[in-house]
Image 1 (tube, rainbow, N blue to C red):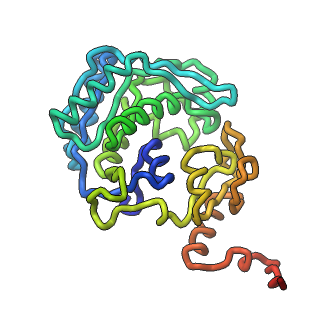
Image 2 (tube, helix red, strand yellow; image 1 turned 30 degrees about the horizontal axis):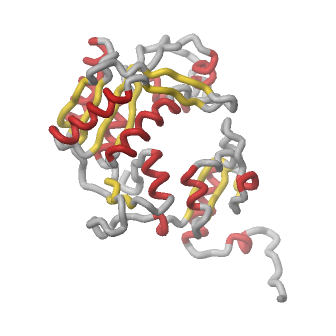
Image 3 (cartoon, rainbow, N blue to C red; image 1 turned 60 degrees about the vertical axis):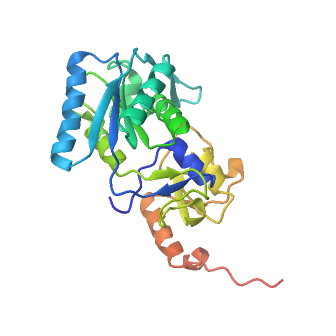
Length: 296
C-alpha cells in the first residue's frame, strides 16, 4: 500500500529511538536465503513462489543462496506465554547474507528457514482458532533482528513448513496463512518496497526520509507497552493510543511502565482518535462531558 512502510522490528526500534531514518524506495533488489535443512520438494515450492511473484507482481527477486549448513531453528515459549527461539548455526546464516550483499548486490533479504513441524500441538490449534500465540514469530524475530543489526538492510523471514491437514472450522483471521505451500509471497512483496535504513542524520539520503520526530501517533495493544519502540516514542510528543480489545500474553499496560496513553476500546475507535489528533482537535473536548477551563 502506498501509505504503509514495511519495517522489520529491530529497525523499527532504532527508528523510534531516533538513531535511524526510513528512506522510501521505488523498488529494492531482493535476495533469498534458503536453509540447507529444507528438503528438495519444499525448496522447489519456495523457488516457484518467488518466480510467481516475479511473473505476476514484477518484483526484482534476483538471486538466492543456500546456507552452507542447516540452520537448526528451535522454538521456545517464555513463562508469560510469548514465543521465542534459537538458531544453532548463526555463522552459516551470516555468511549467506554476506554473499548476497557482496556478490549479488541485493538491497533486501528474505530468509526461509526450516521450522519444526508440530501440527498436533495445542498451541497451534488455538492459533488456528484465532486466539493464542504464534509459536513461530519469536524465532522469526531472532533471525530478522540479527541480519538487520549486522547489515542494516531490510530483512524478513518466512518459515518452511510442511502443509498441515485442512481445518474446516478455521478462524477467518488465520485463513490467509493456511493457503498454499509457503508464507513467502507477502514477505517478498513487502521487502520489494521496504524503506532503506538511514543510519545517521548526517547520511546523504533523499529529502523524504522519515524520522521519529515526525510520528504523530502510535497505536498499540493496551497490554503490550514494554517494547523498545513504544518506550522510546513515549518520551516524545507522539500520542500513544492503547487498544483494550487486542489482548496479548505480555500484560504490560501503560500504567505499569509510566506511559501516558489514550485508552480506547477498539481499533475503530483508535482510527477516530487519529483523525481528530491529525486535525488538531483537543481530545477531551470531544467527550459528552467537556471539562471546564481551570484557574491557576
